[in-house]
Length: 329
Picture 1 (tube, rainbow, N blue to C red):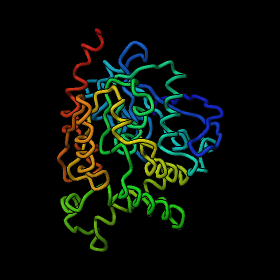
Picture 2 (cartoon, rainbow, N blue to C red):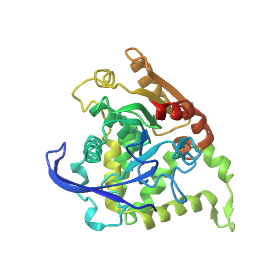
Picture 3 (tube, rainbow, N blue to C red):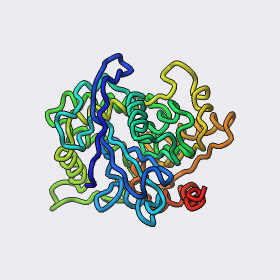
Picture 4 (cartoon, rainbow, N blue to C red):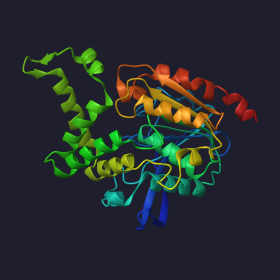
């Protein structure tokens, strides 16, 4: 893991009216922050700021000579406060209901301000990270040149909220909360077709099915590396994505965003459905010209943005291949 940097944020008032102080951690990769175009990468639910390198969760996409090339760009990634990545128990957040996705976006904006960053080349993120990208752009419409939400949307749908509610119930009531919640989540992140291709009803030593062993592996892995309080908080952030905050319409908020918006959908996503992404695109296209939609074709569902690296790189290439020109400018 690369060195973690910290920003102390004092007396932040949450959307729920609570005043808190917290530590915002982050990592940087690639070129110097203030000499190069900056790409902000938002992590997904159980992810973190370690986006590239030997153990980076998005190394096939971000790195030297990769689609988001660290030889040209400066990469910035914040950890969602309370995600436990820094290993410091005092930084965990237990009052998870006090926070919303908008709060996290506001905290990220405070972080950018403290780093003297006023503009970004791109904000990109998958799943909840894409939702936070929408929230950031809605709060500060001039912040970024490119907004790239992947396998996400500007709001948590009823379907997403329902599954977050199930996750919360498991996390609060199970005797093995992280293990059981992860088992449930993995069936949403993939598809029946993906399971069929991978497992073919195979068995381990003719005792139990391969798919059960695979699910158990993911449950145990998360139990070993993640904190219960962190999962509860991340689940809360996911369920509260909503750039309108019930105060105005999506169009009223989104058409203020100056950025070129590049929506990336997944045709088999069972979580953030492609139909919702297309509805978002069609509605926004009525009032905003610089919006496009791209689709990853995969049997692997929501997790395809972590699997179909070649497809995603090809879709993003038209955005990031302009790097040399951007540096000259």
